[in-house]
Length: 520
Ligand code: FAD
Ligand code: DLZ
Ligand code: SF4
Image (tube, rainbow, N blue to C red; front, side):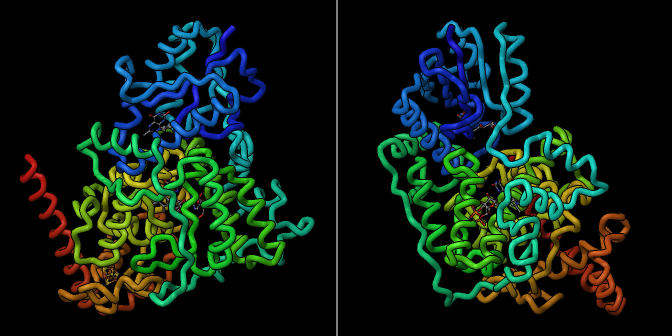
């Protein structure tokens, strides 16, 4: 009796739940490269090549481990182009009596999996993904007992659940959170560690060629390949992070420096989300470095909070909020994203740098995503769904369960504060403090009005003014000091700021109209 076990492209873990208890003699593992997944967003070509190469390498590793793997390539002439079509074909090919699969990472694919039983007439067992500390039930139980879903309290439960950085019942060092110590600004003269590079092997070179040929309409650099695509290389990237970057991770977590995409970040998110690295094991290794005196507590705690706190909180929120979450638009924002999000052609240096880096590497770190790209999109009133689609396109770690709450919730405040306690809106002063971008910019972060004034400034004040009547903004106690500052300005100054913002927004709308006309 053959059991068919589909392994999806983000399930590249040897101990994925669908394999638990399986007997290699009675199972066929199915891996499918399908056009529908390659096309459901306009993926960055590097992301596409990363996913396909990691899948091919994982299939080789599974075969070496004794599994029978039926691997369907994108260019297989009989490939139907969808998960369901390929599972149907494989079920017939192998006369499958049963299908076992680990749950999908997004609503869209969950619906497919839920339909397989009825379609194929064989029992389908969908197993929970065990690669998270909190199960769906754990998160639901936590959330159902809370009036508001504050991440910090979820995180503390996760620390207790895992025992990470605990001293008995108390947090290591006496505090749960060392974020206050994690705000050192970026400077050009920092001696940053050099990240490892993983040149393309034969499998990756084939995939790069395939992506170039099959997806000429997609954009994103495939040059200077540097991503890990095997578990062994992902572990090398992890070891580099632990040995060279973790110690500085905390202090410089929010810093941004021209030409330094990683600084002390690990760029491990893509490997974790694909299944090449185990998040809990990684956290235990981080804790061990702290306990061995190789990393300060603010770094270890900061990193562990991102993984067992933010990452799991995002996932819990995604599944709890339901498929309607993508429609949330509390601020009623409707603008398209400016074309420079695809080209980097803007005089705003912070945006030009982060957009160009994104299209070169398929990577940007958290503060670039949140406080440059996301902040600007929110200030101009970009439609959160469109913004989400852009983030899904560009980053090699993007999967809806994690991208959607980060974009629509955290970054665009589309859920009106379900997930974050205030909109992450900031003026040029913040970017100037945390980065060196303003030094190379034609605009001045200290000016609010006039042609040389940093656009973030007028847009920031205008954003607050525009949304004042919305309870979760105007009535938000965390924004009270900002509104106090706004109210203290002379009425005439407020008018000039509003006019400057209106000019900037009209210029964006004009550029969008011109784009539309030229492509019509
Ligand atoms: P580091 O700073 O070195 O490490 C921290 C690790 O913690 C990451 O590897 C990641 O696994 C985890 N982490 C940190 N913050 C978050 C968070 N908010 N949500 C989930 N995990 C977190 N992360 C994704 O994995 N995929 C996405 O598509 C994604 N989209 C984002 C969109 C926006 C608008 C924002 C603000 C954040 C997004 N993030 C996303 C979270 C975070 O920015 C990335 O995980 C991080 O930048 C990855 O780089 P790194 O591995 O070098 O991070
Ligand atoms: C992102 C992606 C892409 C581009 N291609 C494939 C693919 O061809 N085959 C596959 O199994 N997975 C792919 N993925 C990852 C899936 O989109 C991801 O596994 C689903 O969204 C389920 O969460
Ligand atoms: Fe960005 Fe303004 Fe600084 Fe220019 S001056 S880099 S637009 S924050």
